[in-house]
Length: 125
Image 1 (cartoon, helix red, strand yellow):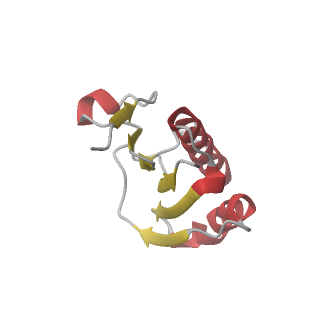
Image 2: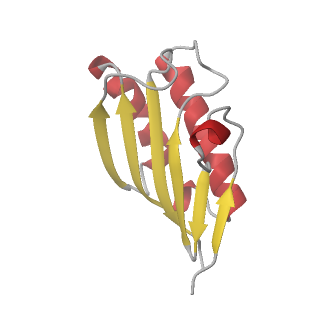
Image 3: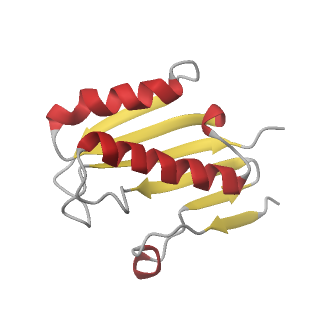
């Protein structure tokens, strides 16, 4: 039986929604959709960098890292932002090359957010 570990973050939405920043089950880590908390009014580049920074912390707390990410999902409110986000994502994942899905959505819980990303990773042996 795999052990489950909930990994909290710092989002003010976690207690309201009843979510964990990440959940580790066995050797898998599932990162919740992560918005740019703390960079709410920043541009798309800064918001994306903030999101990935929050994800990096959650992966580290779970015992993993970007190197072990096998899937990401990128959610954008503006289609024209895809390339800026893709370039930042590409810098981190150019050699890892996880499976990626990019979606255009109508909005997020915080209406100033332009991007949200979730991820799945493994724990290295």
